[in-house]
Image (cartoon, rainbow over all chains, first blue to last red; front, side, top):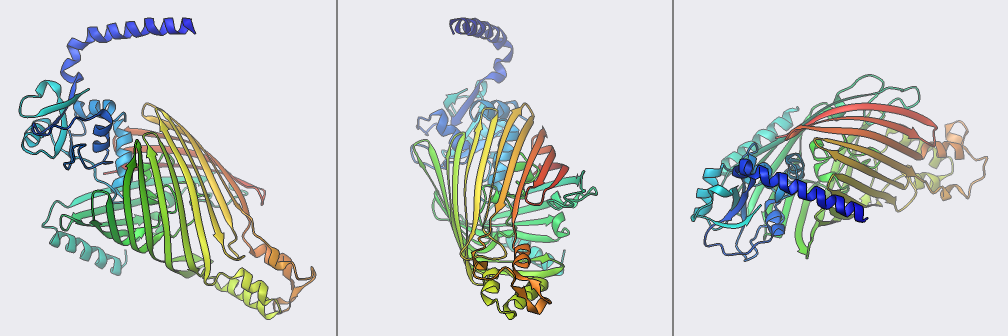
Length: 146
Length: 387
C-alpha cells in the first residue's frame, strides 16, 4: 500500500511538473471562463453550471431565467468546456441531446462564436456562456474558471 | 408515401411556417442505414426482420423533425419518419403541441409515444444508444404510438433529478399477420413513468394499463377458436380469445454511465387478466459496455419467457377432440396455438464514433430459441447519424 502511494506521489509530482512546464505554451487555450452579465450576482457551483448546460434546470440559483449558449462545435473552447465542466466527450453530449431533442423534452444550447457570445452576454442578464479566460473583460462577470 | 401522408405533411409544414412568426423554426433529423444477415440460418430462418440473405431494410430509417414556437408557452413539433421495415412509408409518429405551464410542467397533446421502455422515446434514434437496435426480445411491443395527452413534470431532490410522465390516450395501429391486415384499437390506454437520475446513475419504473384490450386475430386463428367453441368447448375458446380484457405492462430499469463504463439493466412484464393466445410474458436484458476513446464495446444478454397458465384445459379429458375440425385432438392443438417461448440472445458489439453526430456499429448476435432447440447467428452493421 505504502509503495503504491509513494509511486503515485512521485508520478503525480512528475505529471504536475511536466504540466507546469507546458503551461506557457498552452495557456491561451487552457483556461475557460464561464461568464454572465455583470449585474448577475449569483454564486454558482460547478454542479449548477453543468445542470444549466445540460438543460436540467432553466433558472439561476438566484431565481432568474438561465439561457445557456455554446461555442461552435469545432471550437477548442467547446471541447475544453465539455470535458472540464460537463465531464463528457462531444459524442456523448451529442447522444445525450439526441435523446431529448427527438422527444421534445429539450433543446441544446444555441451556438454562437466567442466574440458574439461576449457581446450578447454583456447585454442580457439571462444568458450564460463561456470564453477563453484571456478574453474576459469588464463587460461580463466571470463566475467560474476551469 | 401515400397521398394522405403527403397531404398531412404538407399541411403541417405549412401550418407551422404560417403561424410561427413567433420564433425560429428548428429542423432536426436522424438517419440510420443498416444491414445484416443470419449467417447460420438452418435452424432460425428469420430474426428482427433479417433472414439468410443480406438485407438493409430492417434497420434503415430516415427522419426529419420540425419544431416551431407558436407563442411563448406553446410549441408545435412533428417528426416524420420513413422506415425500411414499413416500406419507407412516411409516417408522422410524433405530432403534438407542447404547452409549457412552468419551467417544471409541460402538457403535450397529439400523437405521442407511450413510454413503455427505457428507450421508447428515442426508439428509432440509433445514434442515442450503444447497440444497433434496442434488444429485440425485450422491445417486443411494436405499437406504442398513441393519440392523446401526456404531462411531464421534472423536479429535483438534492442531487437527484426526477422526471414524471403520465399519459392517457388511444392506440390504433395496423399490422400484417399471416398475410392479413389486422387493426388494433385500444381505448383508455394509460400509464405512468418515473425516472430518477443522479449524475452517472439512473433508475426508471413504469406501469401501463390497457383496460379494453381486444387483439384482432387472422382468419385461420378465428376459425380455430370458432371450431373449438362449436365442438363443445366454449370456455376454452373464450380463454384463448382476447376481447375487452385488461392488459398491463410494467418495467423497471437501471442505467449506469460511470467514467468509461456503462451498465444497463431493464426488466419488463406483460400480464393479461385472463389466459389467452398471447400469454403472460416477461423479458429482460443487461448490457455491459466499455468506452475506449472513440470506441465503445458492449456485451448484451437478452432473455424472454412466455409461460402460459393452461389451467383452463384442466376440466377436459385427454382424449377430447375438436369434432368440427375432423376430430383433431383438443389439448395438443390448443398447446400448439398458445405462444410459448424461451429465447435468449447474446450480442457482442462495437460502436465507433468517427465524428460528432455519426457512429458506425457492428454486432454479432447469437440467438437461441431454447424451447424449440434452435440456434442462429445474426451479423449486422449500421451507420447512425443525427443532424
